[in-house]
Image 1 (spheres, rainbow, N blue to C red):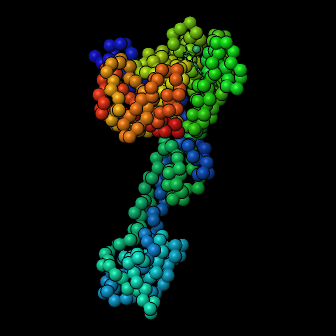
Image 2 (cartoon, rainbow, N blue to C red):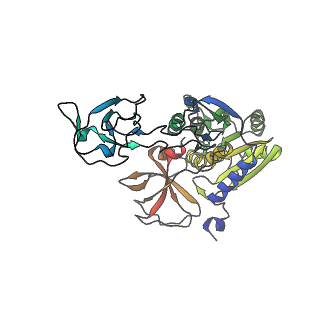
Image 3 (cartoon, protein in one colour):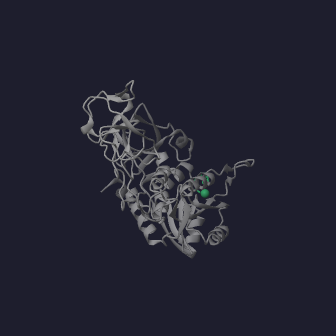
Length: 405
Ligand code: AMP
Ligand code: MG
C-alpha cells in the first residue's frame, strides 16, 4: 500500500482524475464569441485554425544577397539584372545573370540559390563575383516550409498567448472564435478577515486570498464575480451561495476543515451535495467539492499557501478543462536538490522554492500560513509521499510562471 492509502488520504493523482471527470460531467462551457485577434489574448480557442495558405507562399530569400542559377556560376562575375525588395514581385531571372535580393523577397523563377552579400564582391563594372562555392537551395526558404494549405495549425482548446496570436496572424486570421469567459465567483470565508486598507481590530487578519484568487482568475481569462468576505454564519453562507446562481464555479477559501465553522459544508449538505476530500497534499489537505443548486463549488483550504497550491494544482486544471483545454497540467522539470529530506511524509509536499546555481533551494519556512514563501519562490518543489531525498537527487519542479496564466 502506498503512503497516502495507508493514511486514508486521497492521492493527488486521484483528486486530479476526479476533478477531470467532474469537469467533463459539468455543463460544458461551449458558447463561442468571435473576437478580433488581438483581443483573443488569454482566451481559449473554440475552433481549429486550418491554414488556407502555404507559408511562405513562395520561395523567399533568407539573406540580403544575390539570387542566381547554380549552373551559371563559373567563378566569373555575373551582371545584376534586377533588384528585388521584400514586397515586390520579381521578373523571371535572365539566364547568365544574378538578381540583387533582400531578406524576405520572393526568389525569381529560374534562380535556385542565394549567396549572402558578405561572400560577394561588386566589381568596378557593377558585375558581382562570388567568392565561395554555392549549393542548390542555399539561403532559400522554400514555399510551404512552415505550413501548407489544409494544415491544422492550432487546435480548438488551445490557450491563445502571444506566440499563438502571432501564429494565427501568419495565416491571416484577423478574427477568431474563442470560448466565452468562465464566470467564477470568489468567496472568502472567515469572521477574522478584514480587507487591506482598513485598520486591523483585535483578532483580525487581512484577507489575502481574495485579491490573490481574483487577480489570478483574471489572468486566466475568467470573468470574476468578487463575492467578498463571508462571515462564519450558516444563514449568510446559504444566502451568499444562493445569490451566485449565474456563475460557472464558486470558489471559496477557508472553512473547509471539519471544524465547528464548516458553514460551507453545512450549506452544501442542506441544499446540494458535497464531497469532502482529505488529500495527500501539503500544504492543503482538506478540499471540498460540491454543488449548490446545480452550481459547482470548490472549497479551498484557507491558509494562503494552501490556497495557492491547491488552486494551482487542482482548481486551475479543473477550470481550464471546463473551458475545453486539454493541456491542463503544468510543465515540470527535474532539477537536483540542494537539500536533503530525511523524514518521509504521508502527503505529497509542494515546497515553495527556487533555483540557485542550478539546484533547488526551499524557503526556510514552509508553514501553510506563510505566503511570503511563495513570493520568494520561483516554483513548487515536489516531494513524493513516502520518499526521502538526498542532496543532488532529482526532484520535480513546477515553475509558478507555468500556472499563473
Ligand atoms: P479555515 O480553513 O477557515 O480554518 O482557515 C485556515 C487558516 O487560514 C486560518 O488561520 C485562517 O485565518 C486563514 N485564512 C482563511 N481565509 C483566509 C484569507 N482569505 N486570507 C488570509 N488568511 C485566511
Ligand atoms: Mg475560517
